[in-house]
Length: 318
Ligand code: UDP
Ligand code: MG
Image 1 (cartoon, rainbow, N blue to C red):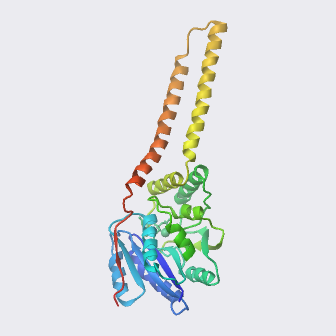
Image 2: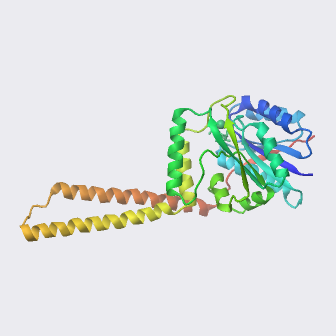
Image 3: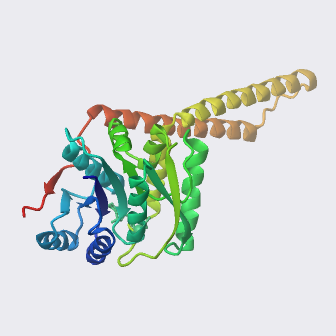
């Protein structure tokens, strides 16, 4: 029988777990496919884990992937996906994976719609937010900056308002699993493997059911920088280009001052000009050393090849 794994990453979502499970059950129970709710507890400090363990006692198709600490949303999704990959190893059954958030901003009714599309042959179902009640103006500004950085500096074109709420057929799961880099960014990874088969469904994201957002300015900034550096060497190329331009500029100034002193006999070189040129070039150098440093830092992390996370899988024993 066909099976769907629903991977739900949860970090401090104690009030949202039960309503989410109820909604999923209401939409998916008794249909002609199997499904399993894979909750990745991303090191929650509240009662998320207890609520999950309690629910697991009465609901057989709940699995908990319990991260040893908070590793972040992207890694949580990876941990869920790796669990699924282990589960389906050497099995030939058809299956799909749905990623969703735990805060009910990704409507459970849509999960059923996505699965239906999959049952009818779609290999990839993506979603697009058309109306985002959940986000305030601050978040919208941050979002704009994030996508601006992303789309101007990385080689990938990553569409706006496409959350990590999506369905992937086995084919895509296996493809994504072949990418074994330490840095993970699902949006980018899907762009890498290609999204030709994708069907996009639109939805209006409601407000968070309970709790508060786990993303703040620093996290989004980090995500944006990560996304750019992981998927592109464009910043290095920009650095090189600016270096060349800077060189041309300084040669220009040099020749101009030679010309002035030769023809007009000016011997007082402008102190301010000198100062501005020196600071201009040293700051460019420092900025681009920083850019190079970002890449080297990542090579350093990649080379160590440490495990991305530590966790234990808590399956239902019944
Ligand atoms: N999340 C997680 N680990 C983290 C941060 C967030 O697993 O370190 C989960 C969170 O519980 C939620 C999803 O990722 O299910 C999206 O987070 P959130 O709702 O805070 O983001 P937003 O919807 O505000 O962009
Ligand atoms: Mg949310």
